[in-house]
Image 1 (tube, rainbow, N blue to C red):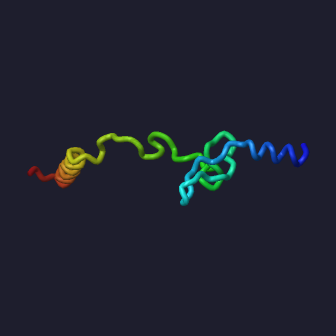
Image 2: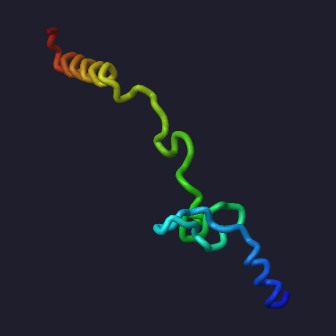
Image 3: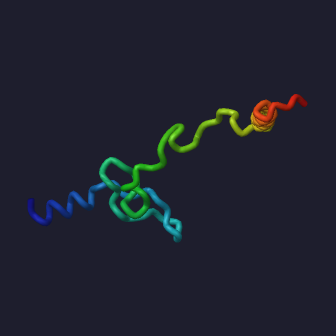
Amino acid sequence: MNQDTRLNHLRGSPRCGAKTRAGGQCQCPAVRGRTRCRIHGGLSPGAPRGAGNGNFKDGYWTTEATEERKWVRRALERYAKGTDQ
């Protein structure tokens, strides 16, 4: 492939969609299969999805759940000591 063909391919490639500080678009070519260039995050795969990112709710830290765990802990401590209060 000669140099002119390579330059034409580079000129015709999709551009990064990131905004610059001046308000325009980044002029770098986007990474293959992505919409951003290597500088603006095109190489990174992104955050993990689902539970791997902590993006879930299970109610473990609700007020009721923490109070219940405290109650169970105190009950077990009393039982282990052998006192009935």
